[in-house]
Image 1 (cartoon, rainbow, N blue to C red):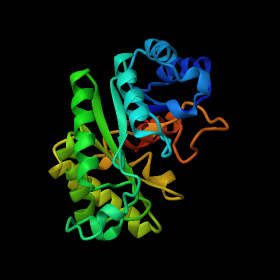
Image 2: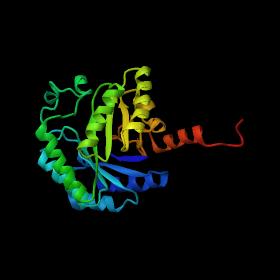
Image 3: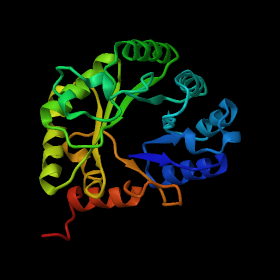
Image 4: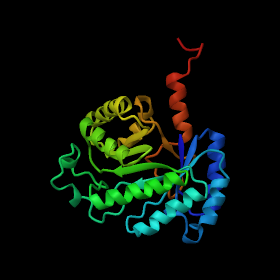
Length: 258
């Protein structure tokens, strides 16, 4: 369980870290872009990371951010002690959808959002990933594709992430039906069998409230949670307490139950 830190101040971040650890979180995901500007310095981020007893991953979801600035944010975060960073698959490409034109990869015909196949962007991503690895950080490559993918498309996309140097692959699709949910679970089973690296495969939207706290049963390694809900929380993410209750109800044996 990874507690998502969507806060504006370091005090809130540290409170949520300590509270999440008490509740059983295994790690943290810090949204740097949501911190007030004066708190986005390496010094403040270092103080937040230092307060945690579990690994922390940093991300900065600002599409308009200068890619070079974003690269520095990632490198500074790792230097400050972040265990990993979330690197968007479109980084260094201002028109990623255009890069999919004429491509033969299984996922390309689905026109997934946040996916760049531009040669220069890919090479620059690999260079940055190499620097981050040298600095001691792990890399999660992410894409919020905005639509459903078939099992074959999802596997091909996750393999592309892996081949760029990702230690973890993260794909967020958008389910529109219960049939899509079943397909997501089947895809998780396929990725677990075939990908060879940890992955997070989930859906946004209404069905995310079902998939997010349960996809781990089918092989998706991480559950992104909140310790509490606030004005800037993503309420599609479950509470840590709710995930623990699901695990307890489904998998904890009790002599009181027939």
